[in-house]
Image (tube, rainbow over all chains, first blue to last red; front, side, top):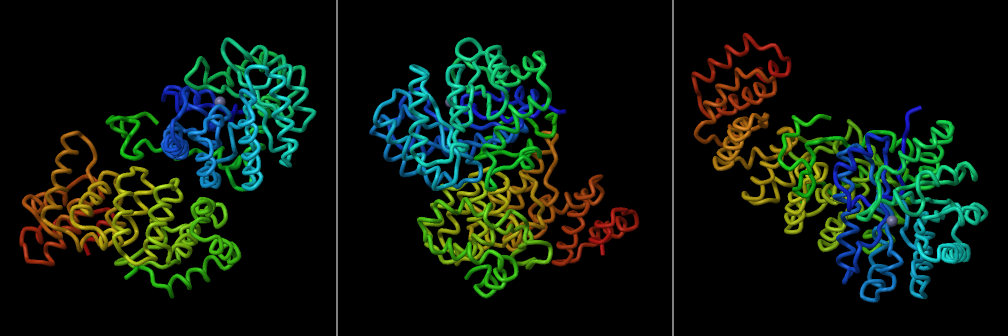
Length: 297
Length: 267
Ligand SMILES: [Zn+2]
């Protein structure tokens, strides 16, 4: 069985084309890029609009040129939910992104410092998700993990959204049982050194099984590895997981969660995206003047 | 005037979207603000399938074989929309939405907004968006001034879009454009890259220095498409005035030609 990976959380905006090449070679067919912060606060809504437009435009185009489908989730992230220069204005522009063809969810939303503002905008965005029939990708706090996780879950439950449309991300050994009991999907971000490593991840899968489990690299401009999903798959193989079990975790679970109502499907995503080196976008070819006819396909 | 008249639009709706009347009514009721959100949903609600091979095609006006069901839905919804809304939808749109807005322009009066949106589409290099603006409709040839249209044609040449799909551009041929096309040929040849096969046929409508000689040469080119357009170019020149050498070369070519579509062009 051919390895096929839906990588459900990576910030390709901050990665280079070599990463796309390596990911494709390692079996990645779809990347999902959740809207998040950019490492420092944005000062006005225009910066969000340009970023959102990049996610549905240039970054999608860039990804497709390397044979990888690009989808995204849109949202006001919890950190900047605290910033009154942008929070309300972002909420105002958000609806017009939620019907775009490559938008498959709302995220990353959730809690970071667990402030009242974060909770308010998290709740409001869950209501938007219900209105647009979208799933939510929930960022859970990296500090005070368990308490924050429980609060994210509590708010989601009270909101009326179906729990099978909730993906609680950045989970660990402490949160997995809570999530599975809630009916939500459990996401794990696998990082090279700290937090959840590939080795720890395999142990979690051995203990809790593959149902409703989703793994991702959460790669961005920080210390992170866009290949941490395929690396975890290699360890799963060594640990005796079957091809089917692997396919469940890295393909069926995320595809089943995000592909609904014509917003992508297994069939769409198994087909090659527009693989055409002569394509350019907004006047910027990624080939930078190299002759497309001489590029190896 | 508009390229598609209201009666034609009505017929198209009946022929292709009769099963989606409710969805259309629902979207019409949402108004302009609704379209800012829901235009993007048209491909999912109406489908991306082409209208099919039997649909309206007029070689001097428009070829609807390039249209998808969602393009027709957009044309119906936007036929009477304000210019400002159209420009906004184009700016804010993703690749599908931009294509739909561009196709909808053929259902509207040609005006300044048409020109501005076509020029905005030119600045994108997403080929699908560019095609929706410049190919399969006489819109660009009718709406743009010389300078903008020349730029569009050169870009179409760069992208390798078939000349046959650039409807109406032959009526806008000028020696200045022909000179640019020849320069572009030379530039590509110097770089060892493929030239746009349609160059000489289009240039033949308004020849500049070098066009005739280039055509004579291309009648003997190894690439079928180059010969095809050279033949058509030669016949365009001969339609304007007699030219014994061109006539002779066409005859010699006819005796040796093997490619059926080039033979057909030779007549
Ligand atoms: Zn993230």
